Image 1 (tube, helix red, strand yellow):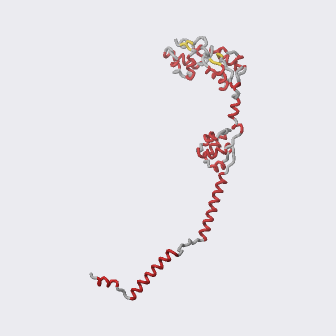
Image 2 (cartoon, helix red, strand yellow):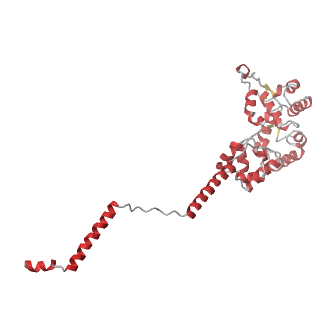
Image 3 (spheres, rainbow, N blue to C red):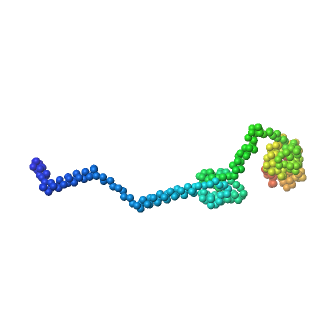
Length: 295
């Protein structure tokens, strides 16, 4: 390709040259506008949208204030909580019913832990409610009261050492010194000891009519069975029906069963054989065995 041929590509008519020139001018103008003119666009604000945003802000604020009012609580005694208040605090119907059933027994809860044990509420709900529990002063001071009774002063903390007396050697005066035992009960204990020939265990205090668990506990802190008393044991294989029935733990019906057992099966060799007999007080077998002679 020669130079003349290439030159023909750049030959423009007058109209073409005018058009090319105009194109260059437009391009230059656009470039100048882009670099120097402020073409930032303002975001158009819609009045309705602004109004809605303002209203939503107020609603959110009201929700926060309402939640604060709902969570505002005052101190109260949980023993007297009503159905409505329990519901407002987040308790279920079953949880409230458990508390009401407990209160119908004329019982009271005295601590948050006891409240949870009775109602079965969750740990999370207890953590919310417990700070607002208000129990009577005597409940809150119970621990201090107990500590006071234990004599905080070291001079009084040392209790007088109690010397245990053998119950088989105790007199009426010794027994009356125990709180809860009067003359009548003391004589009843002594009569029981005489009929048995002596006590072999302090467990036998439970057999004395009229002794409460508290009094028995007091007896155990002051008396004991030091040595087994020297009494004549019952010959279980040769004793008559009358002799057996006079024993405190046998009575007539059981004594008759023992005689029948002997006649049918032979000698009774140990306390285990006796436990097989109908009506025998198995729970007292160990004590009864000490009064019997199996030889």
